[in-house]
Amino acid sequence: VGTHATIPPQIEEFVCEEMGLGVAPISNQTVQRDRHAHFITTLALLGSSLEKMAQEIRHLQRTELSEAFEPFTAGQQGSSAMPHKRNPELCERICGLARVLRGFSVTAMENIALWHERDISHSSAERIILPDACTLLHYMLHTFTAVINGLEVDEQRMQANLNMTGGLVFSQRILLALIDKGVERQEAYKMLQRNAKKVWSMASHDQQVPAFLETLSNDVEVTEYLSRKELAELTSTDYYLKYIDTAFKRVGLS
Image (cartoon, rainbow, N blue to C red; front, side):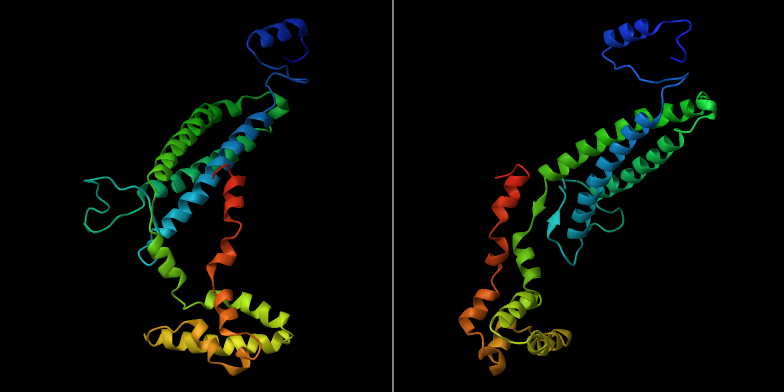
């Protein structure tokens, strides 16, 4: 390191080669810390990706959704006060630890600028963040692997939630179909909004929500352009799932 006044560059190269390390092109008393910051930041990014997925599972496990659940073993307690609770504790833990990893990345970047490129203020911090960051990410990966392997998915609840609005989620596709039939966009928008309000009005009064398909089928302005058969096709989820296999293949699933 430094000027190589005491130890020639060839010895540095030999030692690094024996240890399977590369030689820093330019170095002073301490190796530049940008590579350390890059490493820690990469770990933080991986942790944030785990958090993103864990947070989604937490939302899906909320009582009002109840679409997906992290594994819950026999005898496990979700709450010390409420026996019925089944909290996503593992996913919550992953989300919390991801914040710690991001904090380590800030420390790693603060370590880059050293006094005259030679002080050792970085050392005390790195003795904590380097081993702890590796340990944390390893634990998070191990924990999330267990979550995914034991993930419970309620397909019926997913379908029920999708049908909660009676099919209003298909309004965009029907809007585009009306436009293709020659209806002005604003006029088509008003047609659908008028019928959507009827569905929402009944839902807000705790009445049985009618199918958007039925409401549209009873609107003569709509059926002038779209038959009931066409409306039924436009309110099918099959259209949105036609490339699902391609999406799975892209991430290595089949």
